[in-house]
Image (cartoon, rainbow, N blue to C red; front, top):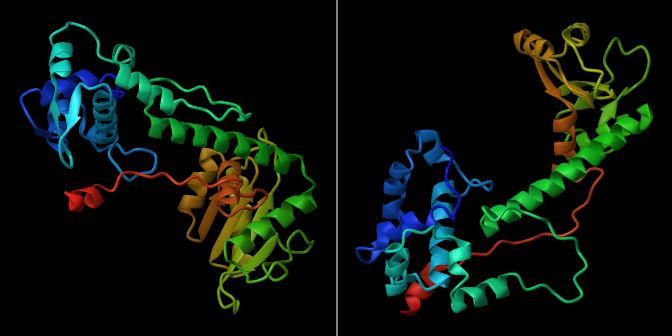
Length: 305
């Protein structure tokens, strides 16, 4: 089964802490065993990749239970159950946010968490209550990223061939190829190039070069193995060892297999990868706001004891 959400984990967290002060990390494996999680599920990480998903959700379950007074956080990484927590366990009920909402201290925590500025006109994002605050943030971020990616790709497909080629030049320059905008790609889109749209210097001195093919296609017009073989032939003509094939659509599986089998190093960049690189290197987009996620520095407070 998938890793349970943090509300489903509330009762198991209480059950594994009811015998006294307990180290939170020590209950991870027993809870994983309880839900019969696979090795892969136990190793699953949160979107940032900095923490295990199960541990993260156990942490949020512990936090919410503490805010409601069912748990007491004693020292760094440890907690113990309260009388209120024991009473909750004695009842054959589901322990979740709805149950915690009966307690005033949890209500105060919830109200502070949901407080909005009076003049805030930004649209809210509707997310499942199964997501903890950190997961909700990443889900909202991914939703925004998907929307912008879709818009970027649509604009590229609807652009002129010249604009598309200039976008590729801007991207390669932003990625560190060629040095300057003018020197980044040569011969891009010119005739008589024997099947290659351009050549880019991999370093500032032009010692190592990469040949480029750029195809502005609609989503329905995929790149097949024939296009890859033609590009391979062009690379051989130029005695080139490296090539980048960029398209605004996608490559068929047979095209990908053909590129893998050929001896020359050919990198395939489809529409999804293209806009992902544009977002990463701020080409055709710009940073609107940067959010910094904070967490409590337990060492700081431990030194104050």
